[in-house]
Amino acid sequence: MKKLLVIAAILTASFANAQAFTGKGDQKLQVGVAFQSHATGINVSYDHGIGESASIGFSTGYVLDVADHLDAGFDDRFDAKLRLNANLCNVINVDENFDLYPGLTLSLKNFGGQLGTRYFFGSGLGVFAEAQFPIAKYNKNLSPAEEINNQFVMNIGVSFEL
Image 1 (cartoon, rainbow, N blue to C red):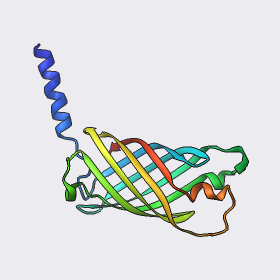
Image 2 (cartoon, helix red, strand yellow; image 1 turned 135 degrees about the vertical axis):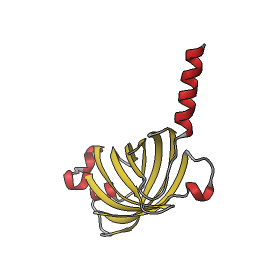
Image 3 (cartoon, one colour; image 1 turned 90 degrees about the vertical axis):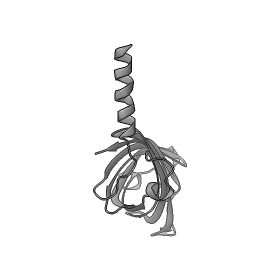
């Protein structure tokens, strides 16, 4: 019984120390699966806190499974983005483990945005879900393969506090 109480106390302390966004200097790494029309892939993003409710970072993705009719090469499958987020966890104050972050992206393929959420279970580990979408495409006459990184994408995965 004594061991069970010690384990429960340690787990409670680790959950209490979790925080989704701590402000300036905060660092998050996210790795997830990307789901979109006619393709699935991987997404990796990094965010660095620059203020109480703001972060900058980058995101990169590579589409692994593409519908055969798209005939997509590496340049169609890969995208890299700079990102700026407004981390609203301190503003909405739902739970210190929860963060909601809308943001803007500047990518190799388009200017876009995202709306994401993170929830941390313990110190250092959490889950995230993020919707990314284009606002302005660099080219209006895109081939079907070029549409791969110019459409709505849903990312889900794990988030790590660095």
